[in-house]
Image (cartoon, rainbow, N blue to C red):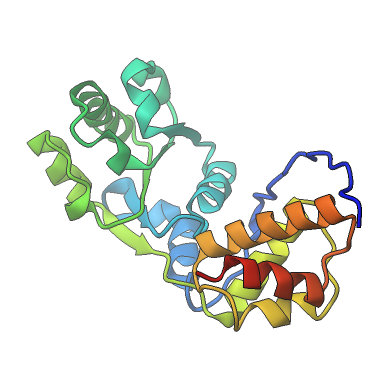
Length: 224
């Protein structure tokens, strides 16, 4: 079969609360995000692996609280007093470990946000005691934050994540495709993202719909 011309369509993640599937793997984290007015010390650390939904929940919280969302790596050049004028979500805090300017900026942001009576959400892929922060005062304050952990996905959550990833790419897999994938794929959110991207590429390249047969072929290609 001749290779089809393919065109990259924009991937538009749906980040509303109604788009976030709740299962036992994430129910506690969702409850803490929705109950943000009651966070001890007005701060929360959202912990989970890549693709677990941290950014999605940060957007849910931002919509509810009026928060701004900023990457930790952008803090060194940010206007900290302006950020501290509202609730703030800081993503991927471990990425600034050892960066003196960024750690100092987060330390001042933490103090100003709380002094202004606002709330602070922090996200990371591991618990705060493993972030590797060098500034002692910042490290101690981060470890004081209550943690909400997003656990590895169960079958229902993995199926829902696959469905969302397909929808974000404007793909319509046949009904049997996701039930076929769930028990056979690597059980992580990152694996789901890579798998859907590979299916998207294969469908575009071959001019085929996303079916169980295509899923089997792509899975076979991903085997070590």
